[in-house]
Image (cartoon, protein in one colour):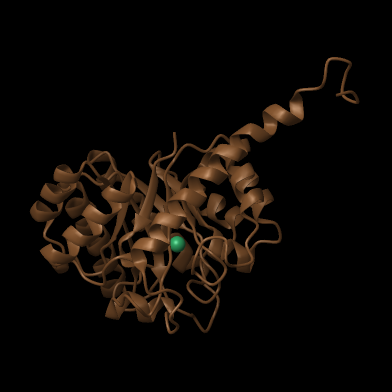
Amino acid sequence: MNKIGVHALSWVGGWSEAEARTAIEGSARLGYDIIEIPMLDTAAIDTAMTRRLLEENGLGATVSLGLDPTNDITSPNPDIARRGEEHLKTVVTLSNEFGATHVCGVIHSAMKKYMQPATEAGIHQSADILGRVCEHAEGCGIQIGIEVVNRYETNVINTAVQGVAFCKIIGAKNVKVHLDTYHMNIEEADAGHAIQETGEDLGYFHIGESHRGYMGSGSIDFDRIFRSLARVGYDGPIVFESFSSEVVNAQLSSMLGIWRNLWSDGEDLCRHALQFTKAHLHAAQKVDGLVKRPGVGGVFSG
Ligand code: MN
């Protein structure tokens, strides 16, 4: 069974106790299984408080982040790359303190628009560092997700096929490809085919609209997305991401280019997204049974 989650930035921009309570209690009340907590600034997360609130509400957690130019593990500057490795290992350690199951996102490079392609040396350095991060995460029982994002947010991997190849270079048991419908809509020729090509290498999935607003109000073909997830037997987390200028995290919102107000009522947005996701998952799981079940007289009769 897929666990269904929601990104904390649909609720709150920071992680004070009051903000964490709003996000965790709200997600649990609506019926989500997990909350994805952004951890760009490791000093901003009180892990004991987070653990207590998660336990009180029976909610699971995952963690996501993007690196930045000061800790970019593709950087030719060894100090910057070392800072990135230390940062990722600290994120894993802290995530483990509140029982997070996954650490994912743009952890293979800075999350930014690069003005040149990635270098071979940069890609291999990133994979080597991530291999050591995976080793640390394995000791914590945490799975690492390498998010495939569009060309304006990384120069390392922009398609699912590249994500699979990159995970093979890392070569760890606990690293998987993390796909996101918003990014796939920009880069993939055929998002359904990309999911099928990723197959068992898929370990984490973000659902979000073409404009990152309300599910179903954009141009993404979610019937095809959910059918493809069902066909590959994907049973990992499915986490809803949506961003609006209504809820701002200074660092993350500017990295993501959240300049527009796409919604004001985060609770309504999240309630709708959960219903939408469950309905699509349920329908998608029926598709193959219907395709394979001919009528009594054969394929062409009633
Ligand atoms: Mn995403």
